[in-house]
Length: 106
Image (tube, rainbow, N blue to C red):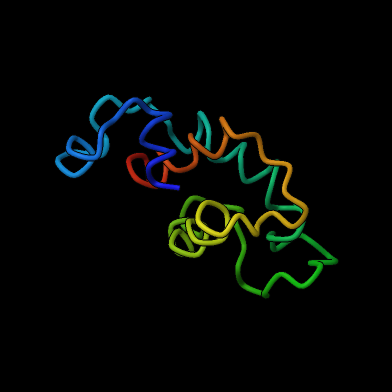
């Protein structure tokens, strides 16, 4: 997956090891991540959600702080395993931006 993401962002393994955020887009919570989590995650991962469909209580993505708290789990399940969201449906471009935001914007 890392090589795919590097290829998509135009980085090489050498430059990624030096500075993984060099040449990155300016992805931010307001400009990208808040909308990503609203679209793909909060139907199950929100303090306001009545039926969480098995999502653990307390693993909510309503705020930047909450997402920062669970950033490692987001990376593993959404990017490395591809197991979230259940049923998939995330556009590849959004996954690339999520990876960049988790590395550089958070």
